[in-house]
Length: 385
Image (tube, rainbow, N blue to C red; front, side, top):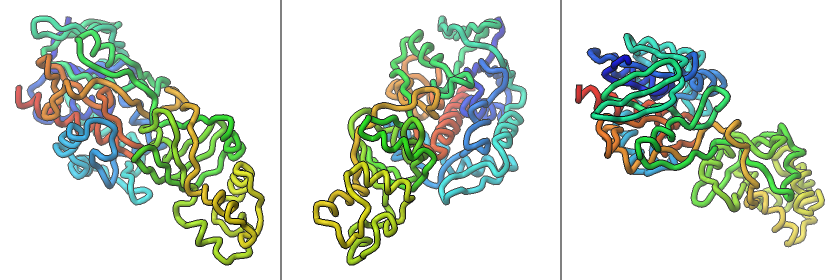
């Protein structure tokens, strides 16, 4: 049984960042156990292969989870800290859509940087974790290829999304075996399916348009993409984070007001309103309104057309784990110290990244969380060392 000073379960964004921070100060024998035969598979495919690292606006309001806990961790290693970290590593992030920071060339840049900074950390790839036990201050990790021990264990196993690249519930299984509270994972950052009354949207597959979606008190403004299975696109993915059941409300025309556009105009509705004609014709049919000159609209018809700004319906469900980019749920944060990421009940046990019950909206928030929580954890490990 091989002994380490620190064992990290998972070689994703949080696991690699934690190991990189530990290696920068040296002196610790670190092992990284990863079930895949290569590290950082989610980093590699994210953002169309260019990895959306973070966002121009990063604070707890963009996360589902305990706001005070999240903000404490983000303050400890902020967006600016992350940007400085990657720039010092030779990567100059680029901004897209005035909000999203991406690697300039490809995700391989951040992966290469993290792997290089991991230094002498031992990468145990292709080791599927079978069981974790804790006895007399030691954590024993049993894999399908060997058994390893350490008095410091960092669980960076991620969530259940992206099952095609090895994602699993192993983090929750560890939490259960160590009597740590958790919530089951549920798919989020995922497309939404439709009730029969909204099947008209399926005819629009491939059409994309900017919208604002309201879910409860949250309003998410980005592009919506109509798909064969329902609705998707950045606005829908972020909205899915906050939707459990019940109605959502879509403003299909956030950049203008129907009332002003139609005032004293004799143009056809489909000509006057600046939206894709395919969408407008399908929408008008769905609400029982003919395409006619705006000047011919009755007050009742005008009211129907105003539904462009407040189309309410209840999704049937979502596209599921196979299409989800993240999960809601995970290890309960009330059992974790935000100043160290250490368990409040088991000394030497740390939880970082997406295995925790903290999930960000689309747009680099989950990678920022992974990196921030990893740095907080590493700093505490180094202080103890």
